[in-house]
Length: 493
Image 1 (cartoon, rainbow, N blue to C red):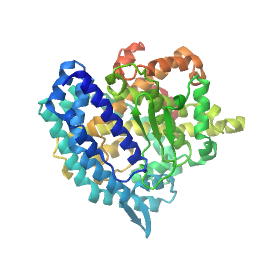
Image 2 (image 1 turned 135 degrees about the vertical axis):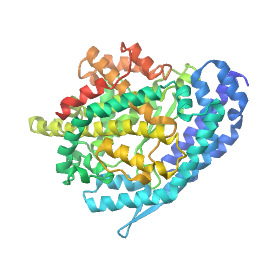
Image 3 (image 1 turned 90 degrees about the vertical axis):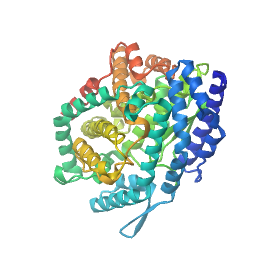
Image 4 (image 1 turned 30 degrees about the vertical axis):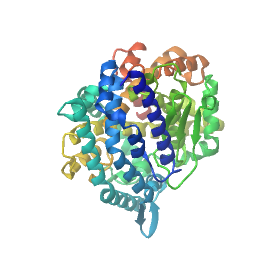
């Protein structure tokens, strides 16, 4: 196979997969056809395609072809899971709740007894309907990766393919957990004392979404002004949030819509979809800004860049841009300027400080959660994916977050391909980019057109460089969690 043929066929495949994921994930289609798409492009999963990618000398192409070989083998599992999720319903005290709405209901219910019952029902039904499917799916993925790479250890194989040093990142993550333990324990106790009203030892996973809901401030983040505010803020940076119509926003409520927001590029840079299932308040703004970071990144990529720089590479980079935008919503100046709190003047200053404390506690919760997930997933992928490892999942996540996690989630709370590592590297990269922007354009860089030009020039490169390469280009020799914790500490003191 010639390289130009591989690339042309690959771009076509990615467009078809992206459109299918948008339609299915947005609840516009209930019968996903991923398997059929992979079958139409089966030539890309053959040994000749892998050899072509290897001969190109482009690591991103090799990783992508291996991912395609995995994708073709696990497509049927993905379809079955999506179909099950769209059809499954929970029975909680005689009330029928769609499985896909469980997270939204947990986030918005002040009734703790209901939350506990709902989360038990969610975990139990999910274990019955999905855990076996997920075990088989991950086993097939591992076998496919090892067959393509000739290795015998999945963790090492993913590290070689991705260029990520997973062992080193896991060590950094364990150090982060140790260094932030006292800060987090104190902040969580203060927050949950007033939000949940139970001793820290009694906190459950079902409490976590409500603990960080910040519903008292919903009026400051009205749904009707979500898109308007994003357009305004990006406009002040000299950026077009909708990228001249290349970014398409879907925030409508639909029964089959995935609860987890997502951005999917269908044609880079010409057609990008941002999908959000609203649940209310600041959380919607933060989530929207995160996905907008992805969307603006994909829509900004130079159209004449090669396929592997526009579509492929280290996703820690696009996650870094997503976090760069979503972390703005944790900034006091941003809150005053772009939320309705700012319209209340001095009377709202105490509320701004209180909101930022809650948001910073949530941020550290998320960071610690992913730090624990990485170590757990390394153990999971070296197991047989059976329930014997479920207790390790519950113990690690509970110790890191302070909320008791149900062991039944051990195989469902896992993103494929060590994506947890991409998120952790993105946290590090975002802190590097934010500090650079602050140094060059002051703390309110988010309304500075010169900063907009600077960020746009970074985004235009797509993922030509990995996250650590982007950091080095900005003058930072390595990625670390130091700047991440330095930013959170004063907010939690």
